[in-house]
Image (cartoon, rainbow, N blue to C red; front, side):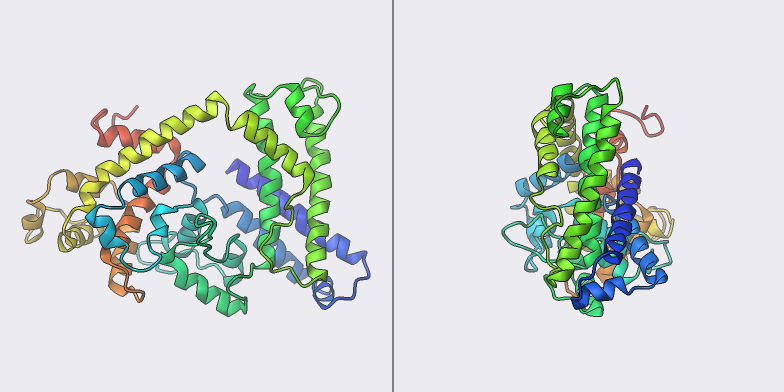
Length: 402
């Protein structure tokens, strides 16, 4: 959450800089004039759209971040010949939801489908503009399957939003460019600061990252460098956005700060000195043990008969016993499965039950079942994922995880 707040602050700064620069220029292109003529209410709305998108942009990240994404993809690729996977992915392009899992896609799923009360199918009920602002990648690209802002399970929702806003299928909402720029700025600086505090970077590394001749952590150079860098790159992002307005490319997909030397320099230092450090790579080792370990145990749920799984899921959502009436006959056929079902969120189970019943896209039931398990795992923190892994693998007793 701390990082999301940093991104939100930078996002607000960029929006304010855009309108400040627009006020002081005399460009007459239609798009520029339209943005310059916005009244205070609409300017505040744009600021809110960008700020909110910045706050939720990491919402779908699984435990262990990018390592978690890689672990999920790797696990499904290892199991793609299993009968349950082939059954789940019989609809065209549905395999990408699992073989190319990404936190951006999961975040859009949370915003549009999962974040809800048990009896409220509308959940957060965000506006079309707010949801479009949160999507960095508006079109599925077979050459870069991870670079997509939505799963196939929510493709119809994305299509409806784009139709309401009058956007071409491949176009971005202009506010999403501002959100993405804020994310790029905040991430680079915070990664370097965190790494410096953990002793992963030398003063020479920081000097290279911030393009300074000398650098001293003790005398506050990093704070001054951060402020100077942020001010400079925020102005660059705002100028780039206005240039896009001027050339009618404000809905184009390339990032505003693409190939910007100062940003690329910091990314290079982070990639070579931070992400390859022992501390970071050790987390990758843990993530690749915990997440596949959890998924291995949940295979038991994938192998259940559809009718049985749905009966037990509906029973659990209603807070009824597995051992009452006709349900007990179904439950008698399963042992470990009942315990695994009890780990699932009733909210997520409600979404599963409703989407299976009302699925207009005709996805197989198993497709929704796989998403149900991913909804559980992707929503965990690192420590909760580790605790749950220890629980399902028999290393601790429930209620005694620590």
